[in-house]
Amino acid sequence: MNEVIERILNHRSIRSFEDKPLTEDQIHTIIESAQAASSSSFIQAYTIIGVTDRKKKAALAQVAGSQEYVEKNGHLFVFCADLHRHDVIAEMENKDLGEPLESTEKFMVACIDAALAAQNASLAAESMGLGICYIGGIRNDLPAVSEILQIPTRVVPLFGLTVGYPEKITDKKPRLPLTNVYHINGYQQEKDTFIAELREYNDIVSRYYLERTGGKRADTWTGQIASMLEKKSRMYMKEFVEKQGLNKR
Amino acid sequence: MNEVIERILNHRSIRSFEDKPLTEDQIHTIIESAQAASSSSFIQAYTIIGVTDRKKKAALAQVAGSQEYVEKNGHLFVFCADLHRHDVIAEMENKDLGEPLESTEKFMVACIDAALAAQNASLAAESMGLGICYIGGIRNDLPAVSEILQIPTRVVPLFGLTVGYPEKITDKKPRLPLTNVYHINGYQQEKDTFIAELREYNDIVSRYYLERTGGKRADTWTGQIASMLEKKSRMYMKEFVEKQGLNKR
Image (cartoon, each protein chain N blue to C red):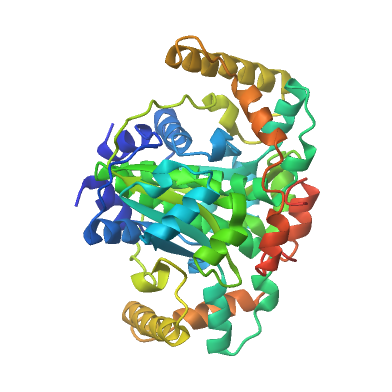
């Protein structure tokens, strides 16, 4: 196993950091790494915002559900799907690009571009001995986030990424069985097998929690996910994204 | 610079592979690496389909615009945003999860989850000395792709990923200026600076093409992207995604 794969397989989300800022060099290496990722038709449809302002970090932490590690970390990045740059291109090139920029296709491209870049950033950070955690919680209130970060139209903040020196190392959570995630030559259609795999995985996840909570908690994965989904969180998203001029047609 | 960052910064898309299949071990390491990525609230909302069937590969290559390297490579993966698994969860847990599964929020989560996994897969492959290329071209005709790969509702194939032994190494394309992609404490609002940066980048991109085509081609980035967007490609996407039961509310 080479060093890259070792790093990848050793990933765990870190939720407690030292209050020690990253250096400019570290930040630049992380951004350059993000930018080195592939981009659909070279469209480069994302922007990364680094947040250093204490008040803004506190406000973002509040949006994310007052998670302490959103405030206290080495650096906080916010990854955005961005087609605003392409509005500027339309102006520079004197073209009407409204329709394609409003399409679901291009919104998907922007989300994917941003995520590919973010995963490179994460791995670059982890390879420096830093820990990372994605902060989906900023999506709790994107109108607020947009105000805090002065987000223009055609831009949607997707998630935060906290990076820093780990204070507490967490355990690695077991993933879905490989055969449930990886199918050959077509989507796996045998429902009984599919459900049997999920039940098998439930046992693994329950054991994981039992061991780590001294028997107090024994959640299954399907139970956990069903409860999470049942909350119907962030149902305002369609409206917000459309208001930003994306995913409209 | 450590090995991980070196690998990341050294990325280039490979579009010509030897006709030498990956081993089962290589494929499994790539999938395990994909699965090790972070996932929003541990939802694991993606599925990867490995395509080995020659006829299916040929059909997918045709959808993607008859790109030879979609057929001839070491392995072809198709990454899908997947909330079908969560429909099965709803049944197992006896809950009505239709509304959240149809939300734009959860569709975004699935796209992001799939992309984070894919970038891990790419880097794992590259660290083994293999080359990769993302195949957005499969989105040219997702109804056809869905038939080829028996895609159920709540699943959207997002992109292919060809992996294999590189036959020809390509050059690394210059990325947007770091300051254009990375803003501090808020979205950069000074339009003149923004445009000046894009013009500076246009010069870099033109020089890149001039040098590599012996003076025959001198595209600017903004020109290239405007022409690409002008084609209004894949405008059927919104309808298709909604028909799959996603991004509807």
